[in-house]
Image (cartoon, rainbow, N blue to C red; front, side):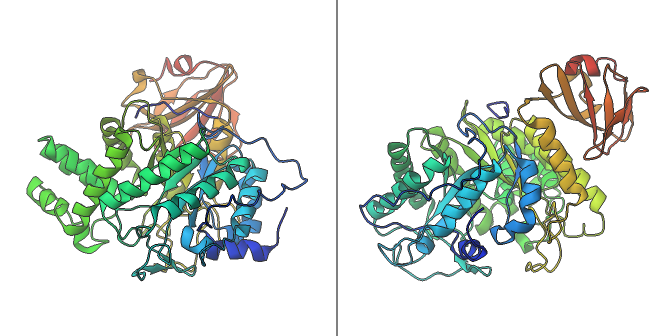
Length: 492
């Protein structure tokens, strides 16, 4: 990891619903787009800078058709960032006739929430690419993307996006999404690189303050990359251990794509399947685009057990150019059998996002914000912070508490002196430190009382910590008017 993480109404419901079916873009020839819609008269929070980091690293991604239910909670995440995926083929269903209304509404509302909006620019499959879609997903009937038939027309579309949404505070543009999956990208790695270079050239020429982001290789593909790198380095035993930690909840969920592995030979076979080989090729192309600075920011997706964070961070440190920011636009929890254990799921969420932040990940967006009961799996495989109606769950209260602690604070990893005993993170603001802690083993750890110390469960009211704080494997929050090193100096 190369840069420590630093922190930093409106239209009708029909428009918002239309946005979801839209969630996409396509451009219209050489003319400049119309100016952005006039912002609401309601005073909006000042736009946050995404070049040097947002004010709060902990955010979420949500379904805009349920914005009314989610708005009260989203205001608790002010200062964070989110993204919206757009498609050329959906915004410009007919060549030369672009409809920006839904995306304008999303940009306006994001700004009013005090949440920085990033955009993922996809092509889709339509007149602009030729061919027929082979993969259609969800009620919005999103398709894979394909290579544009005219890169000049594609660049004009990209230019119109940047011109239109720069005034809303959009400064980061990802090119496509999870291109390692055929259901998202129909072309080759080389074609993807051509599209990124064309988009990057246009984005920078249109807005010198804008930053280019890669597609966000999938969580599973990153796990394969972790293992493959170690195998290639002759560290077979480490590779097997990392694979087992990373995929402990995934084995068998995709047939032979993620098989059980107990030895290096099995691991090599798993890495050599058609699907996993494709993922490794796209991961390599993504890293080449980072190396030659075509791409400015690395985008990570992670949905695994929190014990997979450590090998992922090791991989990112080894394969990301120095000085390149790393952001996690999609973080969640794949847990097929976790429905009946909300307390464990909430605690694990805290561990996952704090480990990522402590490892230098500058932005972390939880996905999904709320459970969708109509999902294809028929159960809550991916855990939401809210109930479908917007009611806060324990996990939601916990993430909001992390956002409160982190907003306008400096992210500080725990000192080496407590390694092996405590895991967690610290947020320092002025003379006050807020620590999120849990035991690194099954043994409770005592943190002695500190001046002004208050402690409690993450997301709950804090009480005086006069007798010190006992830290178990359930994360707790500790706040005191002392530097982090001094608070933890006498840990036993």
